[in-house]
Image (cartoon, rainbow, N blue to C red; front, side, top):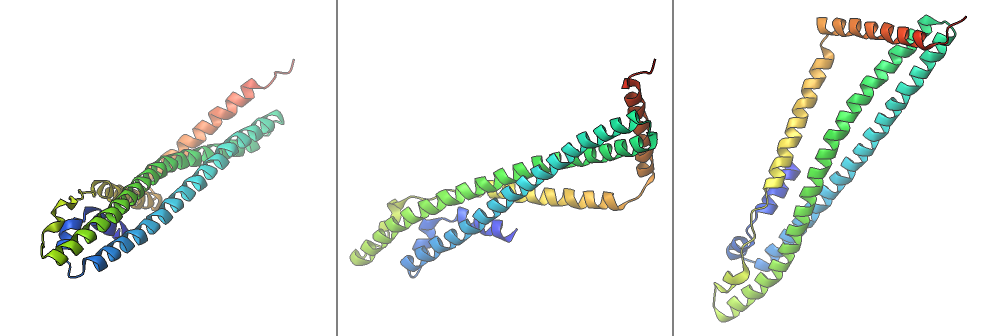
Length: 222
């Protein structure tokens, strides 16, 4: 992801070295701070989008979970009315929604992890920006004194900002892994196989078992 690669470059930046090599240190500092502010805004937008996606997935999960309960209730009503065909349909819909609910539950788990990674990247970049602003003020002042007195090395006491790229690297790896998983899932969905037919048989068997259980729980006529 280009954005994350740019952030990684900013987090790894050694401000002292940049200032030492710059023809205009003040201009370079202003540009570096501006770049970090722009990247921070983009990451903030991505965090907001990730949270919104997480809320949407949670909503979908609840809809399907509620549907499981509702279709099971309808199956019970159909059994009471001795409508086995309708009961089978209702049980099948209940199982379909149960499967969807489980799928959304897994997506929520993955999305939560991704959101936390983005939040971590945002926090680290925010701290780096604050450090850069402070360091720029110090280094610019030192650079001005060095030019005034002819001491080119007056900035040696400003300190070196550390490496900050590990969280971004993990985030990039996580995103690539998720993309690979999504691609694999898509391929599996498009492939019709004997496994699909076996799943259908297993589902029908489960429906019949659930129907029998519903009938067994109905009050017996005396």
